[in-house]
Image (cartoon, rainbow, N blue to C red):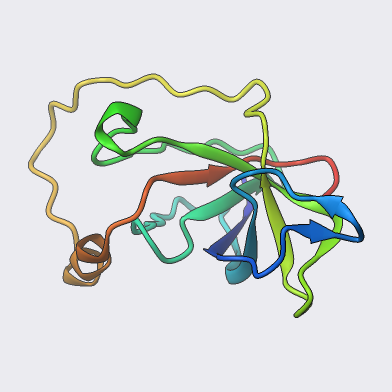
Length: 144
């Protein structure tokens, strides 16, 4: 099937309140990195550790995706996974949307040992990895 993939680059906020409402710890501004429709033919989509790593997958039709996270999420190793939602009605002073940490809902991951061929990321990916960032993901939120 077809699905929409939206990805964002999180950026620091200069404010700690929006319309006098305090922002939760971990809130950040969102700059849209990509917004594209994939499918119905199989496609490969890769995210680096920095650019566009806060992402949303939204099924436009019955769809499935297979997600490989390399290296796997591991909070003890500094590779935790934070789920975000767009803040309902929240905009930064410069009109960027605001992402706030949220619950993962019924989404979960299960680490499995990879037994396939050695993974060689493209050189562009290696440039992103050198800058480093914690793993981040978003989930479909009913307010979107």
